[in-house]
Image 1 (cartoon, rainbow, N blue to C red):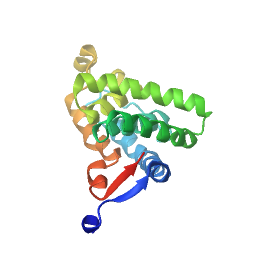
Image 2: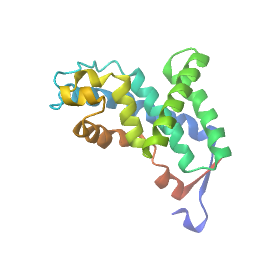
Image 3: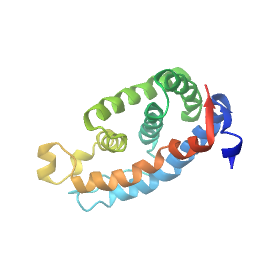
Image 4: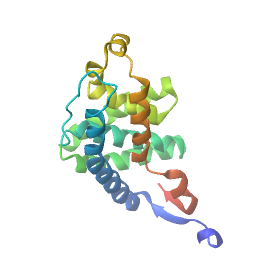
Length: 180
């Protein structure tokens, strides 16, 4: 539709509330499904009994993953600016003091970045972050617990759902241009 007239230009400040709200809603409403999936995982020796309401770590992982995801679609300067703008809005959604929320968010971002450098897959890195933050190794069968590595079946299951929480920049940028 916009091919004749070019891409629709959207200011980062106008996009930010929409993007953060969508990611917030998806992560808040999606976590009970993930908690249930992990609680019923047959590959675990026992259920981790994750409560559906214990989604704060998950939301930080999803937000940090989306911030890191920007680096695949924008040049470093634009990505950094967008990360700063988004972080301010994310802090509001986390319901904490903005400085504390920003600090936690960027700690998660650094954690994901280090995982991503090692594994070269943002979705896998996010899944590993969930595995670590919810201490899922404690619930694995003895073999994988001793190896201190996620069971590949559990990782596959996590990776299938984790990617659904990333903003689809490839599709969005076909029709839009972000003005940073």
